[in-house]
Image (cartoon, rainbow, N blue to C red; front, side, top):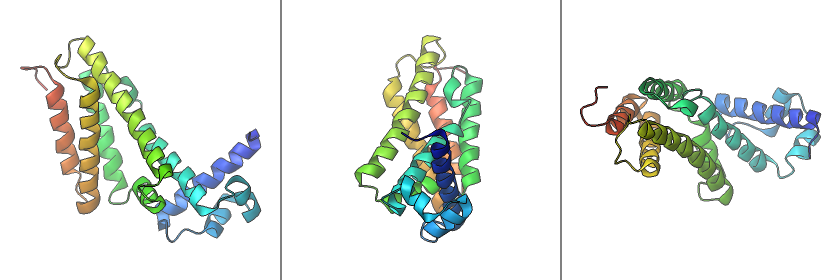
Length: 198
């Protein structure tokens, strides 16, 4: 169990590694760079990450996964009105437009190996948390009569997350967020009851 000071030092190392990766990429980031940026020595770094760079990258991937959800708040946690859904849609598009063609989480997961248990765990946890919050929003809107009553909230939430990820993949390939915008707009239109105005 880490002390408060130890937890702060570990967090500072992760933040420094994340910043280096965002600025220079995974391959160009060295442990020396991380130590310099975090103001720590190699012995400290290996105290918190005894397995070295791969363990540190996994911690950064977890931090970046948390940021994906944090950047969508407070909208994601309060999808109870159409205005909230529209605000969430705008926040998602803006987040990925700002990120551009570089996705730190995607790069990290690729570096760790998409099929490794550790990378799958990070991705799985992110998707499960994201899906749960979207599903809750759909259920709340359905209970108040504001979305189609024939929808399966779980399957619909999974489809929305898949649409976002597809749009993000195209954005990373082309630099255009238009595909992401269209995918989200179509998803929101699908939620609306027949005859409802956007």
